[in-house]
Length: 345
Image 1 (tube, helix red, strand yellow):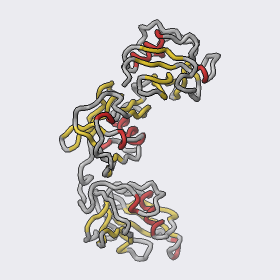
Image 2: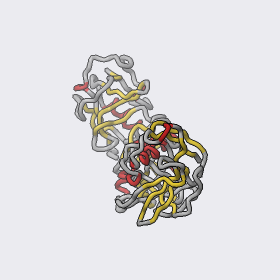
Image 3: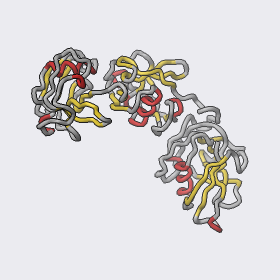
Image 4: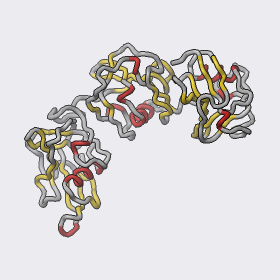
């Protein structure tokens, strides 16, 4: 746990003073428009334990996950100028005796009031590691170790995740937890097939720097009727060397390859079904239906990595096919190659 020392330009002597002494643990909250915030137990109006008003009752804010972005919102709401801050130990201004209204607050730092920040659990639930425990990662299903449909464990029940409540920051945490590098694509609409477990429909609120997904706060969501047609999947970089972009599914689109950490396109010169077959196989998308040219799925941007590709059809990855060499070509993006595979997942 931490204490926070802040310097407010509105306070006398411009000295460092302790602010925000917070109770230990977790909770989360949706607060009404009537919420106010105050600092209690400090030696001036610029310092103290953070308390919020909800349903006519003052309560405290738990300290887990509390950081300078959260503190900045309180300072702004109280019209204090935040000049500097230091994180210190817990309950410097003493524990509050009221209800604990908020836990694991997730502010970006730009909110005008603390009630607009995300937080974890239920109003007044109390503190204890993460309140209602967050989801644990089962893994990625229906693809490979580093790509597939996302499934999580919550309250000893396996669940698929609705694509509407999952974003790039959440994907960064999942790929990191699986030791699979950075996320390449977040894919909705059951791209890796439909699950048969329950649906997780709460909003996952990862910042992107967490080591495990169960450390991410969650919020209630309006997606309670989400079906397995909307199971989310993802691809992480340690698995993916090729992807299809701008198509109707992950098995159709403009061909792009990853080289030196950067995605680039493939020139359509001599692009044929033998080349397309390697892409479809590499992505577990069945057989090639069309080898498309002339930027059928729209022109890409960035480098054109491969020109004059020569695949025999037996290669395991497009990178193993012959070509003039990385970045050597006579094309522009109006000649980007594309593929339609038989498994339009």
